Length: 296
Length: 328
Image 1 (cartoon, rainbow over the protein chains, first blue to last red):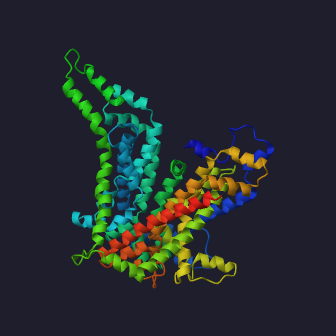
Image 2 (cartoon, rainbow over the protein chains, first blue to last red):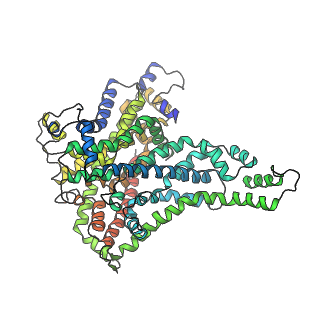
């Protein structure tokens, strides 16, 4: 992962490049201009969201629009949590619970299964692995109607477990952990633990899990983001008064689409946890995306 | 099979806890053997349990539901055979939504992948602060789709939106982004592009870094320009990765839901996709039929039609990309 992050276009290891060869990889000023424009465009909507969230409504419709944040952020967030239609605090709490539970469960079960597929011998392994890869091709939304019917049968409509239980472990997670485990853990390590009298689960817990930590971290981050962001399924199964944070935003948007500062305060609060995670773990996330791409 | 041998060796030793006593190979040995044999299945079973109940069963059950006139509120459950599919083929609303979906999908995917390719090529140069650029490019991906769709909807506002203001600076008249079919597609496609360009750029970058440097050096010695190197070395070498991103974009693009739903906050029913359904996607149409109109059977038929469409489109795209790459 680190090697991928370290070397963009650096052929350093090869024979000393001649002047011309070095020029081959040098970024021109034009490259920098293009990249800076691209990054600016990619960050601007996020920045604009924060600008509006910290302003009053009359300033937002001004021409030209204000381009720096104002001082109304606290007040707007206060209005957000006081708003009777958004159930914002409930939404935040629900999203935090659902995302945390799904993340922990996915990382645990996916690494357990990934370890089995990578390092254990059992009948039917290859066929089973193939079915897991096949499940990754099925879009979750395809099953949304019967999934809803199952929830009705279980009496889970408008219950938080409806957005948790179906996602406790994913094929993507299993496959990702399997790929990582097969190259990160030497067979000798497992056999040594076996000789020392470890049970298979003991081997997982004491030997495999620690070795899988980097991949588990990336999977955890991706799972958290995905659960936090889920929109369609919670919209179908949860009622407006017991929302996830994305549904709180939807509640606001439907009722207060003229009150931009209120809506933007909501979107900012909904995005903030993800941005914090990203600022802290950005390198790992990028490494995970790139590593996943090379494997695929 | 080595694992079996090791397990056997383990229980042939006296257990460390009780020296002197004769080992009890049957009991401990059987346990160890059971552990080796059963553990793998125990470890993978959580996935299969969850998948069978909440993944595979729903998929099959959708097919069953689609053969019925099925309402949850009304309690209707009448076998109608292929009637839903029959109706689907002549349902102009469905085909209207299909055209919308494909229109937005094309506007989103092609620029998205092309721009990502150019950005990846730029990131593949020797640049200062590469990580900073990468983080900046991929930040949109880690924001919430619902939240940012609202931000974009405000930016595309006809009277007060940032985008009409900006194009006004260069003398272009304001555009009513949400009213017309074409412009609303452009607006929604831009939300999708914004979100996914950085992600695809990173994937292309990862693939570019594994292209052997010697190829470029040889080409440079032969006097090939950077542009030529890009089109004749980089792009052909990236073909598998391009196929991967095209298929991922196809699956995502055909299921488009959150962006158009939130783009229509000003219309009475979010699932309509505007007053004239000008940007209603297939997924919105499915959702509206099932959850909005209590027509779960027909909604399920739409879901299956969409699933088929995703498979067919992925295949077509796969063949196109392979063909265009192959003639090079």
